[in-house]
Length: 213
Ligand code: URA
Image 1: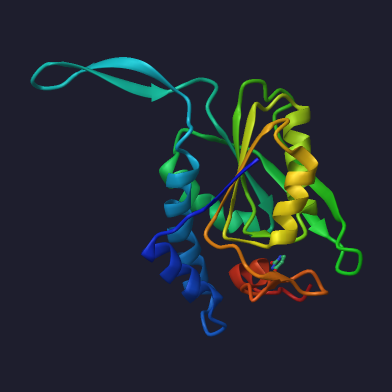
Image 2 (image 1 turned 90 degrees about the horizontal axis):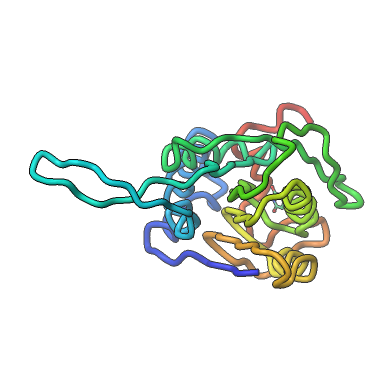
């Protein structure tokens, strides 16, 4: 497993604004969008390409195109949806699958309530969008599902991660499969209620409101 904590002044500044409890949902969504574009740039460094030729107005030139099959982007509902638009701006040819997962507030165990993914992910590079890598339960379950369907490598893009979550992903996959985590920040710890500390609170609520859940 590889972990990449993206370091860039713009990423740090946007993450700080996201953390600020005074940031409302409108600004939070806009900041998430911008942050995801910056993180996806890092996360897509290993994208597979094939050589191709084009003709410029001056001369023939060699270049690259994205290899087939196209990458699959998988936002984990609900909060991962807030990261989809930014990711698709950078990778407009990608295809999108959906995973709905919710974690029990008491046990912190994640269960899947919706799934719309191709049955065959052979040879696919997958990008999971999950803003908060907290206990790691949700991400591990999502990654297991993708590898079980033939994905070859999985990159998770997270706004924030906790050491406990990183450890859980590492313990689950080690170096046996190709898993990368790209995050804007690695925080101190988890609270006893499973929140990232100091974190930014509940990412889904901050993106979309609590809607009375
Ligand atoms: N999910 C969130 O939205 N926030 C946390 O801090 C942890 C999990």
